[in-house]
Amino acid sequence: AGYDIGITLPKSLSVLLTFAPDEVAGRVEELYAQAADRVLGWTEERTSYVKRGKHGAGHTARQERSSGFSGWVMTHRAA
Image (tube, rainbow, N blue to C red; front, side):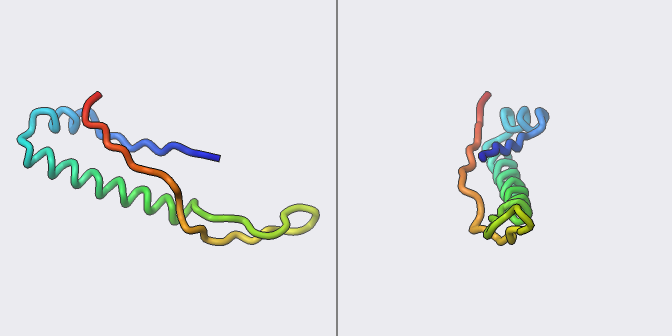
């Protein structure tokens, strides 16, 4: 199974990035990227696991931690 996680800026911040000086826009993007990393890390801790063993016919597979998600982060700067 595959899932798509989208984290978007509110329109007001998108407008700010368009008109802000490069230094301000860069700082906002940096803070946004840090927040997105925290959200993805939190999600990964709680939802990235594997099941091992037989499941069904009276057996229950055990849940184990996985090594994490496989994916990438993409930043769109223009829409």
